Image (cartoon, rainbow, N blue to C red):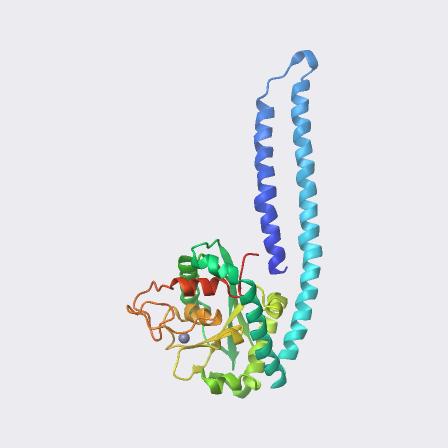
Length: 320
Ligand SMILES: [Zn+2]
C-alpha cells in the first residue's frame, strides 16, 4: 500500500473509528446500568440498545468505506502513479541525456517549489512553524554478496537525523527503512567525487546506477520524486567519497551519499540531508552548526533561523 494510502487509513482510524469505538463502549456501559421500566417492558433499555446497534452499523460502514477507499481506490491510483513515476525515472537513468534532463528538471522543480513556498519561508522566519513531514530512506549496496554496511551500524545516523530535525525545525523526519540492492555499481565499486568532476560524473554510468537503484528500492515514492512534492531523500551507502565522509549535490539530486566505515560522524546523514534541502556550508563561532564542515562540537548541533526556514520550505518537506 502506498505511503499516502497508509496515512489516510491511519487518519481515519485515529480521528473517526477510535472516537466511535469509545462512544460505543460508554453507551454500552450506560445501557447495562440503566434500570428497566417495567411498565413498558423495559422500553427505555431497548432504545438504548437500538442506539448501540445503530452505532455498530455506522462503525461497520466506516470500515467498509475506509477499506474501499484506502485499499482499493487509493492503492490503485498510487500504483499507477508510481508506475508512471518509475517510467519517468527510467528515462532519467539513461546516461548523459537522462542525466542532463534530471539536472535541469530537478532545478526547475526546486525553483518552482521555492517560489510557491516563499510566503511560508517568511512566516517561518517570523516563528510560524507548524509540524511538517519529510521522508528519507537508506539504500545499502550488496557487492560480491557483501553488504557495504550493516543496518545496525547505520541506525545511529538515522536516529540522530530524526532527533536533529525534530528539535531544530519541528519536522517529523520519517524513516522509510533500509533497502539492500543487489544491482552492482558499474566497475564493481562505487566511489564519489563531491566536486565539479562528480557533478558531471553523475551524468554518466554512476549517475544512472544511483537513479536505477532508487526506482526499485523506493518504488512507493516514485511519483512523488517525479513531481518533487514530498519526494523522499535517499541516502546511499558508498565505498568511498574523495576527501569527505558524505556528499550531496544539493537540490540537483534526490539522493545523498555517505561513506562506509571508518566512516562519518554520527550526524553526517543529517548534514547531507541539509544540503539536499539547499543548505550550504557555514563557519559558526562555536562550531556547532549542523552545516559546519568537519565534525560538530557537540552531539546536539543547531540550525539558525534562515537555515530552519530553508529546510522547512524545501520540496521534500510537506504537510500532507
Ligand atoms: Zn557538507
